[in-house]
Length: 321
Image (cartoon, rainbow, N blue to C red; front, side):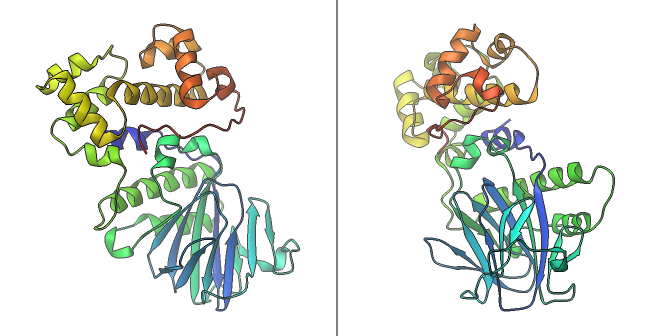
């Protein structure tokens, strides 16, 4: 297991918001909801992403944009078109006058716009819960990124478009998993694109020494690692490993390990009914108290509060930014 695989293995969409927008210029679609991440694919036609405080980015047929909160973001054709629809949440879209849109704008299941044969077709999927993504992944992304069609072969777009337009048993679950797959494939392509500056942990994975230390910790996070043992496994001194690791990743090895263990614990707290003590031992802590102390330090909350879904204003972990 490598850091990227570990990071993406925790991605889980639950109740993702999907829609198709079929429009003729001029039009502008504004995303003004609280979703932490939205994937937008230009199935056909052209548009521009107009972030609040950045230069517009062009979207062509097959291009996908990832829009990370905080928003809002506007996608338009042409770039200065007036807003024709504002997406507030899964149940509310506002028209240009600020009034909720009615059924007259609906063109079928999760489909809105002018007509089905309009020249511009935009497909969007949004994560509804920030914990679906995890703080490590979230902190690794810029506010807006674009993956051009020629950088990533994408058979998923057609599958998502077909699923969005029909009603079938288990449809939401299928859409959730398709959104996860789309995110993973787009991120993997984006990290490899020329000119992209991937996060420090991703670059460090390619280093023969630091990358080995990272893989050791990710393969066995519950092992009682020390800098001395990691250095011995990597064939260098403790001082040399600590210096190289901190220089490439941005944090010392043991700090990185603590933050990764807390991330794994956070996932298990939300997806299993295991006790805090059991989870603590699974991720490398001897007691629930030890995990709670680390959780509070890294996340600014307790494991119990996290499991209950209590919101908290906490900084993203430093290790994987």
